[in-house]
Length: 168
Image 1 (cartoon, rainbow, N blue to C red):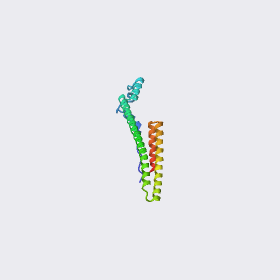
Image 2: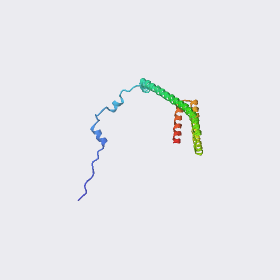
Image 3: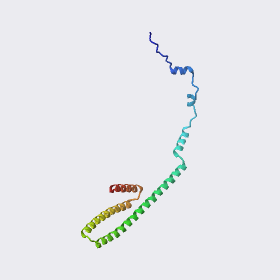
Image 4: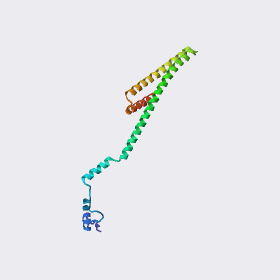
């Protein structure tokens, strides 16, 4: 028994395509090269038109931008006004609470040593709280006087968040 012949005939694809003739599936290369094209001036005009964009879109974006800025300004004003009100309330409560607490603790003392200790502790707490709030007020006043631009406002917010995280 002999070995089988495993050779296969090879057909050159380029030669086969040439022998069958030109393809009739679409435009030829000549047609593609001789197609009508815009002149250089026309092309420049088209590019300018695409860069320019829509006027109505520009107007719409400007209006939205103005609305957004106005809304931001309103928000800032509201925030700063509420901060001022809070300051005033704090000052009022501090002055009234400190005088009333000292009176009540001094008049109603049954066990003097215990009450004195409690009184000293509460004074220390109040003093610490008072100092912290004073620092905050000073920082707020400084930042308010320096400028009220949007970037500073954002930075103040970030700092406040960091302080709150540290306190908790």
